[in-house]
Length: 130
Image 1 (spheres, helix red, strand yellow):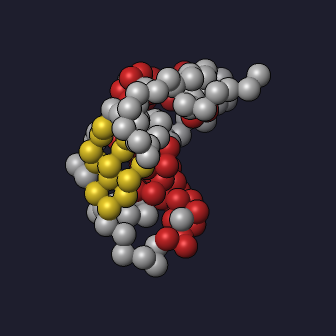
Image 2: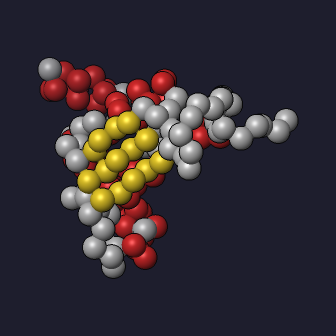
């Protein structure tokens, strides 16, 4: 099949070459992401951090970045919004050292209204301005 494809494209003067496999390409991207995260959080790397609490974890943007710097730390992610919480778990449950809690944290026990925004990181118990 490869010979046929090369032959057909050859008739059109198109050179067909193999690109790196998907796993190689993904590994390259992940390595770049790790390096970016290490640069971003370099100032933290001098500390012996073994537990990380992400309050208002949203979809795991912060946790996934800091995980690249502290891959052996235990992570505790809190996100109260049901749909966003499901995305958080989906994004990070592949790691064994993550615990997820579908609740909000604050300085007082009680219930509150969360004002939702289409851009979920902007959702808040604080009232939204137009």
